[in-house]
Length: 348
Ligand code: NCD
Ligand code: ZN
Image (tube, rainbow, N blue to C red):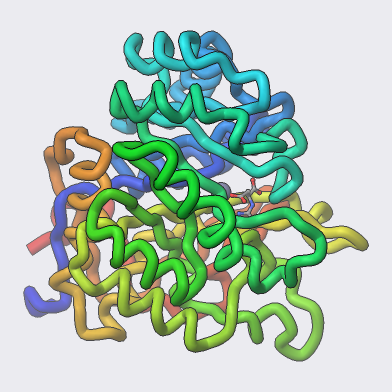
């Protein structure tokens, strides 16, 4: 195989992933650990991870779920509620338990019922986070039922995010899993004070994928995929080399029975082939040279963490179908033309 049929990059990180708990954790954690050196672990368990003690215990359960010899560092987050105490949050951060805090507007998505009902009331917490340099991760959708579901991200930027960033200067915020050209423009305009993660699936599908020949629950996630112009804007952002856009899969597994039912859960499970999916997108855009920055450099720099040692090699060639145990991975049924090489002897 010619060298150009292989791509070796610094080991990447996933800046937004759901690993769940219990049996699901044991099923999905090995996929993420195979692909990524570190990941920002979402705290929306039931009950949510709201204390450093709970985060420490969850981190141990994650490490216990990894295969022998895996090298993977879970970076824990605190689930913000109306009751979050700035002092306790700061202590969890300074003790190295929390890497960031996650804001879910109450009712916005899976397990967000305990989220924040009035974001203005949390200003003392945000001010403390700005002071200590603790990143605030935002699920950027309003929950107002009057707002069209496809407009909820754009309206969040206008009604919530812009006023928040104006009220709390110096806050290090990440707009998670962006889905619109509006978000791309807004984050670009902030030129570095605001980061954004982009999922693989939002680079690949638009909202038509939800209704292709019938209802497609496995393409349903929140924020929901938008129209094609937005997908193209996201692609442009991801490959642009702008360091405020970085990889976050938002891999969010749910049992098939909870997806294929009367009121199916939001979440797309990409962990088994996440890096392959991103590689495919960058390849299609003729931008493979920019994959390493997006996947392995910009996120760490934004968080102020060291870059990973070591590399991962991708090779052209179809990736194996992985993922079972009652969860449907996004890549199944799609042609993947990159795969991760596990065997160093295949590298050249
Ligand atoms: C996530 C989940 O299932 O936990 N679902 C999703 O559609 N992305 C929650 C979230 O990140 O919104
Ligand atoms: Zn998520």
